[in-house]
Length: 363
DNA sequence: AAACCGGGGCG
DNA sequence: CGCCCAGGTTT
Image (cartoon, chains in turn brown, green, orange):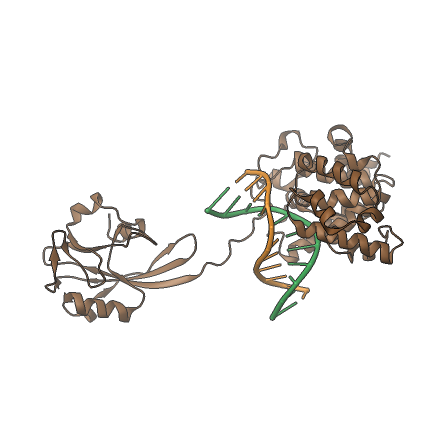
């Protein structure tokens, strides 16, 4: 009886560990020696920066503050000076505060108890698990961005991982796989997951062809590798409404107005436009002769800008004439100071029109 | 220019 | 608890 007859496939963690033994990183400074303090420091630094950048900072930091009590006893300035260049200084402050808390409440050492560790500033659930598993080979899961990506792909978990329901599901999967990890290899397993996500199952262009998990990866099988993990939903854009007037003279020319030189659609030619129907009506009364209420209501144009979504209500009115106004060489100017111009349909293509307006006018 | 990121803060 | 942010980097 072979084990694969029972389980039918080699465990996720076993494949990762085998991969790690061959391709993982085994010579990182915080792995030798792999003490709680060194692992903690590395985890905090790695939260925000890549391994290659962290290494020299780690070495300088650990040389200046060789033990946790050394760090606790240091001045804020001294700590910050050794963090300078890494950014995210709030985490250096948390690190320092946590070191002091350990001296005051845990005998000058990082607690091995997950709850006590989690209670320290700057240490969340994933970082606490990373510290305990790496420093002590204790059986705790991690769930950083790398692991979320690997699990979402391997299991085909859709939904943005920032959603509590999705994150909960990913934690459950992480803990499920953890049960298969052989005793004594929890530290390696944690490092294996991080290395795997950072170097093989990367966000862009993962190396699926050489992946030890490819045969059982749901995303791979279903062609969803690029779609998972689901990206954060773009935040709801503010919405604005406006009314546009499509006026035609008896010859069928269309009245266009030049936009101001700054702002949306700067200097392009568009239909006369107002924020509200009432403003549009006022503008019409000042500029044109005709019956505003006779205008035809066209379908609303939805146009999305980078920072808001515009719902533009076009109104169409034919056989309109402008009132006589002060003229200059370029033709009439509206009361708002923007140039106005009757444009023949055939001329539209030669002018700069915003795409949605061009489409509306049928050009 | 936008996505990304663990933890913290806030209602 | 759920939602969103700060503060930098990567794509």
